[in-house]
Image (tube, rainbow, N blue to C red; front, side, top):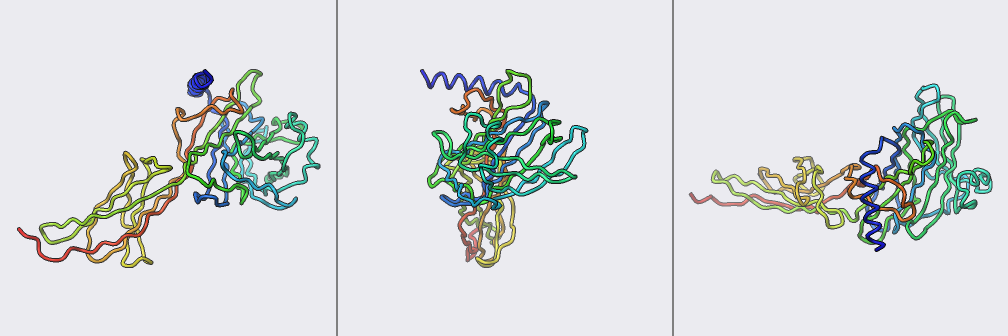
Length: 340
């Protein structure tokens, strides 16, 4: 019965999302797909809704490692943002993301997270530019049943004392905070938003799916023409966690030796993640394929109910960037004359 109720709720929330106006979204872009590797994680926030964003809760997918041991005052990343003042002027803001002493933000924590006054870590976002200098705290807590970490940001209402801004876009870079999962799987990051909208409006959510591992295969088949010329058919597939990925551009590289490559062609993957190209083969040649797909928009039908915020309406689903490289293969023209 519980699973049926969750399925019904998922259908209702996705259906509701299709009718919602534009609003805040956040996507997650890990820069590495290596198992159990620490690296840089990029969070991209966008808000084009009618009501300004009030709170942002980022829930890191279960399975990720998280390091919150940074010394106070150390820089763990940065932020590049755009905002609008209450007068309508657009301002470019940038600054460092730093670890801070939690005790210095006890009052802010009481206002932003009344349900939890103490936190495992506090970071500060430096928003500087256009004569504006301000710090926004980020309250961070470690693993729970449904997330490996939670980040909460509370944005003051535009026009409130000391905050004449509405944040419209921001890119946050986190260095060596998160460690990739150690096993293959689908890992879902969820971000939940509330806005300064009329009371009773449900929260919205964004989800990013990270599917590990990405794989790119490449094989070759020689084709001998009647003219005596030799061609090679290069084919393979792009997959994430064993699923074919269609619609991504694959770059085929060729060269006279394994250390010297240049672009031969592009091919776009189709059903099942398959791709292929045919090229003339004039001598022994080395081949390799690579793919570097950016964040991709996914269908809302792939949104999932988030157990910690059952009332959140999913309005955006993205697929994490995909990067992979195939093994190197060789091909040599066939010798001898073609029989008529």
